[in-house]
Image (cartoon, rainbow, N blue to C red; front, top):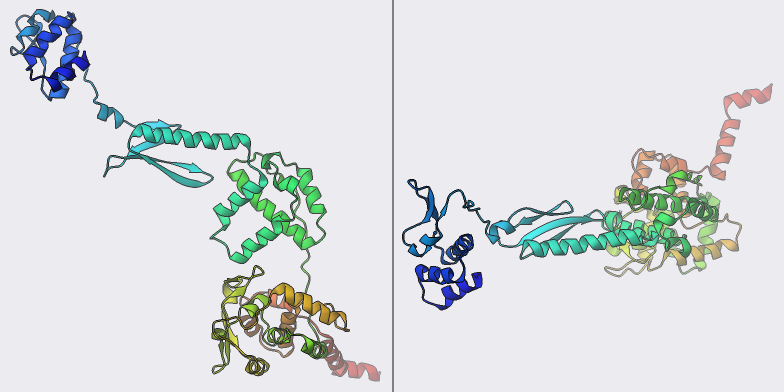
Length: 440
């Protein structure tokens, strides 16, 4: 019947009385006709109302609708009209999908909502509330299926990197993570994280011989599993049940004065001799020396600026930490060395890699009486040289990029060389106490 009214309204030039006559022919149901007229009033934007006759108590229509008089009913039999909620009003009512509310944009006619996945917030929008609701249901179903299927250790490791590390830690740290994760075999890394057994990790750690590497693998797994527990991907954090591997930090080797001379003579035959001398004279980290450019050197003020590192991935990155960014003096042997080197603008002075240098220095040491040193031990030797010359510790720390007051300079880098040991033995032997003792 509503279709009929729309047809009459849009296709015929009929007034309300004519429409009512047509309705009378179609139905004897007062309430049905009344409902249709209400619909018509919404189309016509007319105000059709019933009213109660105070004298008779009968519900009547206004006199301009005489065709409806035969449908007058007593007020006892007429059900009071219920205010219908317009479709637009219904759509604006609050809707929630699994506790997530769908909102209407105040400045436009679109709708939106937000949901969270793996700690990140995502946004959904649509022209209608129902459209947004449907999109939200689809997303929530996908999340539910992912949880049911289960996430592998490798998948969560990549997600963990994205959520907590990429853009928040230095590139060098990310390189370390990628190197450490390679120690975990495929049968574990591709297994659902919730199904990994504690025995598998214990055996994994036991099979790693290097203590420091074993500790790094444990620390990485603990960080990954701690966040998996927070995200409720796992119920039991098995890493908490494994004792952290112990690692005793070994001191490097500092060459004596005589050994340093021997090394410098031996490396003269190497094409990498200049960077070996540069590190020994200035006490730089290998990554810092490899990143030095012409702009970092000021021969007029005799200063060297360290503000970047060259990673093992052959990329330039920031320094190791805040203290590593520094300006230090250029010492005389270094100035003489630089005057002999051809330096190009905006390019690294030493275009080598860490692996190449380490391999070369092993070849130099193998055919000598020198101890089995690494290239980093040249830095150890520089710091020990400073200590032997009684240079104040805070000055040494500022030169080598250690935090002022740090115990690292003394505990790790300072070494008692044979020369210093012999000097102090002779010094004690010549003391008054020892001299008097030998006379007795």
